[in-house]
Length: 115
Image (cartoon, rainbow, N blue to C red; front, side):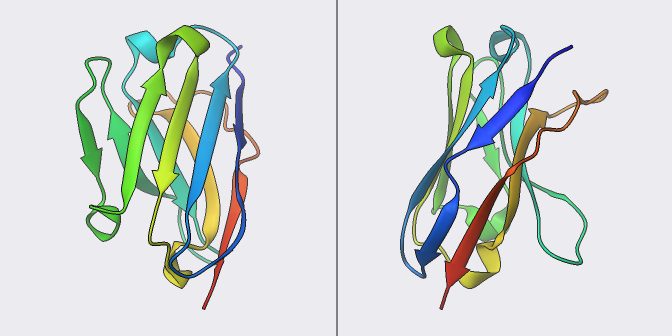
């Protein structure tokens, strides 16, 4: 069973940056469109960004120009570079396959942006 482990979250002031990482237990990144999701308190989990096996990327409107998704297939690692962070980016961030069925969700990594 594929395991996904997210890391890199933390507390940062508005305008700051964080780089999230997602380590996969198997070589899945090169064969899947992978994505980052986030879930804020009291809200449903939402898609933030995705990247195809060919490297094409897509972003949710509110993060365009601020976030960059990337992948390192050799290391089975997915990244999310987050710049110009805003308080509304506060959430638990998860990685997973873009399509269904999803892999088992990891514990996520908490990102808290203070104003």
